[in-house]
Image (cartoon, rainbow, N blue to C red; front, side):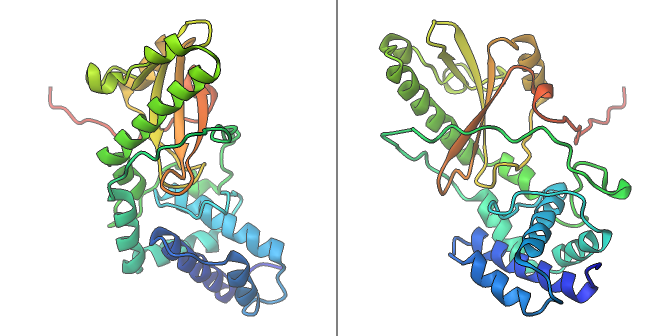
Length: 279
């Protein structure tokens, strides 16, 4: 049975409440939220609510808005759900403020003595299934900031992520018994300048160079990231030795996945910016 507007509005309101709490650094209980929400719905199950929340995450990603990391994005959502989410985004000033703060707050690199458990598998390369009118892969809401683009410009967060990876590479190589190589790891975006196409010079255990570009987010694993034309060109030119390290959930419990080689193998690339010239 199709979800009614009242059911969809209640579900979206519940999700946005949790998202607001998460962005503000406040704790909440997903199970308790779901239990209260089910009282407002017409015989829906826990699994059905879970899927709806995952659908909302998928929609938010398309609008450049952070999502609740515990609700992995799931496509094939109904048009009504997207409509209600869009309406809510346009009239929720508290979420707007919380998202802006979450994206622009300075960050520091956490110091860990043990990085075991840090490295995880990357997301599966799947195009999020959407209705034809929602097929554009990146749709900022009109008159709203694109929060993910704003976070990508957070210099403090980016630098903290690079410093974290620098420490991780020292740890990784020393764990392999390669202290000499660990001592040669270099933060090239600081020593040689930004714009080289990578941030960290490291090594494989056999001594082969590893060029690492670092992309950091405080949000979930499936959060999209931005690459420059130069970074993309570099990744293709040095495919055998290029690695993009994606740090996520950075402010709470950092995790990392490694995309090696050409980025087209791992994700879809969608142009979001054009330059307009007169000559």
